[in-house]
Image (tube, rainbow over all chains, first blue to last red; front, top):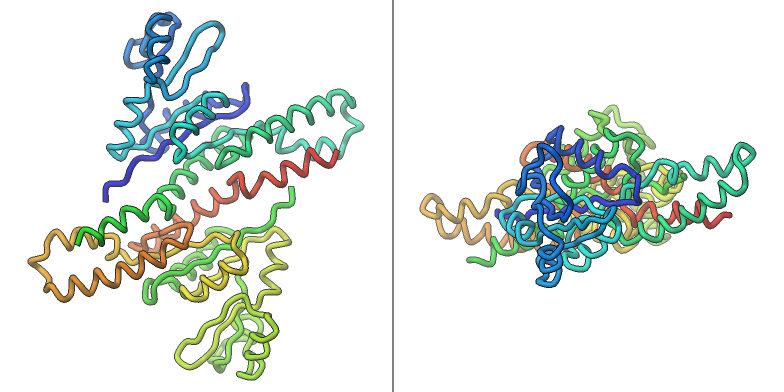
Length: 204
Length: 204
């Protein structure tokens, strides 16, 4: 059966280690993902190849891509634009290939609007997970630090509720294991396979 | 965080190998499941222990259990009744333990009505999965055999659509691997963990 590929969107709060987890997935070849090449307005660094590491474009070309709806999501980071061209992603999915996109929470929200059947993973910092332990031992930290952390946690949880999965990034290996399980489970979820089965018996 | 346990319901068409897959999970201790002890009206076989293998009861006691709503699901097999007492299942789930129930498709439907947040896995015969290949080589099988198989497949697909996952039982090892991934993924699904996170920051 020709399944449509899975679009996996890896996101989470800034500093949580999205890039490290993504690189571990790429390096260890944990599962056969396709990676979309991003478009950026920053200059190439030594050794970076246009069309492989990034599509290096001018600010004008980037704005044109935005206006023409060529980008699935885009964001700004230290003065430069980064975006995911939508064409290659749709092509790879149609060919049955799984595609991994790593992006910030704003980017993930945009992808969700355009491709709601993607699988959205929110990487959480381990201290969000262990916050309750800290709260039980308040003596060891100042009230200000605790209250600040709680406010931040509330914001993170508000964002998390729009995702499908929340994976704690306690160790990169654990996070990768969970992501592998998620991909495997999604591949056998009824909502993804039922149409293939239906098509099979309807063709007669 | 005190998670509520996961209720996993393993079902599928008769003869698909549900019991074999369940036994493989139990034997290999793939993951730490609790198993509910079923109630039955059949006589104990040599070596079977009451309260461990089954709760052996009279037909009258079984009917009373049905009438009092003590059973999560029940069914009849070659003249005997089998049922899952609901009390122990709810207790184990509340203690954060994962519970596995293996039952036929009618039993699974009843469990779905009573405990809709369970995880429902439909085990599919490999020939449902490979039916399309057979159809492409019709010359090798009679039209009657093919049409009968298609009618049966249509029925199976109608049942499957009420499940969360469809796992092909091509080999027991593969089926167990998929079920392991499903359990892992469900443990980090946002719909299951978000309440724990919310409780964590609301308590302040």
